[in-house]
Length: 362
Ligand code: AMP
Ligand code: MG
Image (cartoon, rainbow, N blue to C red; front, side, top):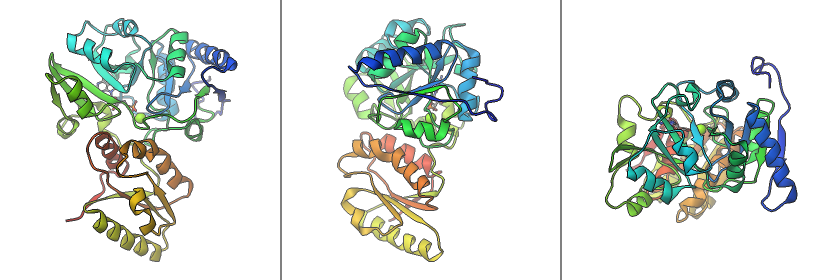
């Protein structure tokens, strides 16, 4: 790919359809891995969202990720590996708690930030930090691709910076067609929200930098003797501990407002606001739980499933935000989710998507 002219030149983006057990899949993954080895950019499915991958040792390739996404260069990238021994080559020796976390949650949506070994990764990956975030994705196509490429794969979400993360290959195309070499299309992703990012404050303290697919409750249950610091603590610090925290994220093009409170009051409030916006001639959207969906009369009303099934809401969120964009909705109101389990990560992403515009009804 012509990295120089990326902004002006459209390149062809190859799409490889993959499906486990299909004979053509092995060949597709071999081709995609060869592109990575050549310093190209390949988007691939994981169990969280689609990632945009490059050889994490190759600075020109990693620069390509930042250029294609329009990502600020001080926001480090997560490195994806296919085995614990591959991780061991990239980071300094770590405490038993880190080893236990890897064993318990990898492959899976947990990114562990650890001190990086010198000269193993492009300095662009770590954005100049002394640490690197590493994870092993729980997706057969992702693991096969990384194994075949035989390199650590730096991969942020495969969206233009600031946009909702892609949960379908079509979302990746929407944002990055012509800007990347290829997409491994493995269908819809699972969790639908990004990984949980943690660091170890000391040998027994797990600090959550970004809530995600592995919930705080799950961490507590697995490590009852560890101290677990929630993401709130990390987010309220003046200097963000996870550099990505300071950027606007996941935002739809329309103005999104979250409404929190007793469900009946929330529904009544949103109905009135939608009506007022319609009077002003604005196109309106509502994102709500199935239980109350019939109350709303916006131009586009989307359900995120039952409020008793927050996993489903997590799975649907980003696709819904993109649907509002496709329908050119100008004002969107969303019901808030209860903040337990995956609801914590869900509300974290929704608040960022809304630029923290949250109406709290008494
Ligand atoms: P994404 O932009 O979806 O790739 O998310 C990556 C997240 O992981 C961002 O919030 C980064 O700030 C965070 N992250 C990656 N590497 C590190 C690191 N070494 N230390 C702290 N946070 C990191
Ligand atoms: Mg992202």
